[in-house]
Image (cartoon, rainbow, N blue to C red; front, side, top):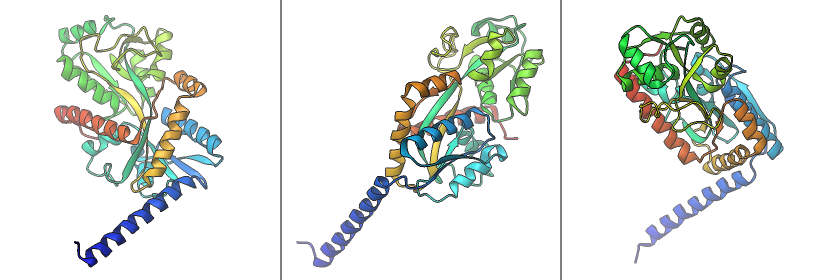
Length: 327
């Protein structure tokens, strides 16, 4: 027999847990009851902003509430993400974060938030694969030929990025490490400037977002060498993968994950994720994203969390090997 005081304490704890579960369930059942905010930590016009607005529009239509996108640009995304970290964890604020969200904890010591403690992943919204492109005058048509050319001319070929620690920079360093070649990193302040100089022949190659480069490829201003995805993309099925070119396991892309402030009720997180997963399966949404070069996801919070950890591990290996420092 247990002591009466133990039984009483156990009953109080059990009652408290039941009350918490009832409150959480009730919050999910009555959700949403007012305006939802999605913070986009970059200016309007980028793929992240487009994806945030598409999700906001569909959620608003489905649930009959206002879902607004608030652009809080600055600090390479840190200002908007920090604002999200400090928002009330009530299920009415979400943040769309890009690759730098997983790379920054390794690159920077000055983050105003804790990446792994201040947020809860909701879902991976979508992925844009990177295309390895070169200036049309580069005498190489395949990954093998480009690697061979770089080995013949060590330190002569170059790759563009839009800054230290950005995904094109990490992709270029991964290429150097996996192929055993010596190519020079040329950082720019943005993808537009990088592509302008690539087209002009000032740099040799670049890992660019599919929608950013394919117009130039079709116009003959750039040459597509390979796609940095595990399999060929249905968006550009004629472009081989880097793995087909001998670089096993090479992937690089731009991705967009929806996160919420830590302690947001898990029932609300799950409800939002499930609704977004349904949205991502709709033909009109798939067509819209395909036109923008985005492959939709909508995976579970657990899968999104594992994805972020995997990306951080991948970036950490490249950053540490190449001794990359943030600008």
